[in-house]
Length: 222
Image (cartoon, rainbow, N blue to C red; front, side, top):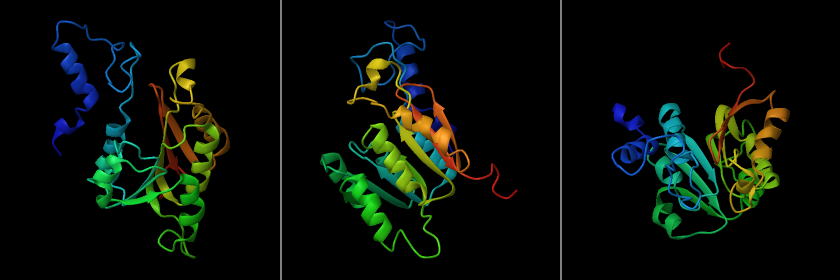
């Protein structure tokens, strides 16, 4: 693989800043354009980070709960052979890519309770572990994100990965329901209640990304 692939948007953005005479390069400059009204906040570029994981781990089946602008899923359809996405609302972004992945236009709860449990494609009598990688980014509330996590967990393969977005708000303002809400409580809950089933790491950069690996032991063959 071309080493330049790992020069992510974040690195490129720093290079752009460095090449201007208007801004001094430091970790306090805004490097991500989604929230330009909030200055001096270092923001995690999660779509490219998840793509890097996927290119390394090569998942066969990827599920995204909450698609919205297709920032992540449009990358995953070029990496993973089987991509599934769920969103309660369709839009022009989803319509642009939906012929390249299987789209379920419904709430994540309806998908996880009804489709996932009752569709033979996802569930068989021998083994219902199906997905290698899941990204949860629908409703950012603790109750909804934890419900999504609980319901999808059994359908993730051993040593599979679950990503949760918005788990490290940089300030009290970022716990606003329109931003991260209280999804950070879900990461904390998993750490306290799931440690016999998985391991979790939260990247402490706003708005946060928690990486969960489903496993009962660190190395699967030991």
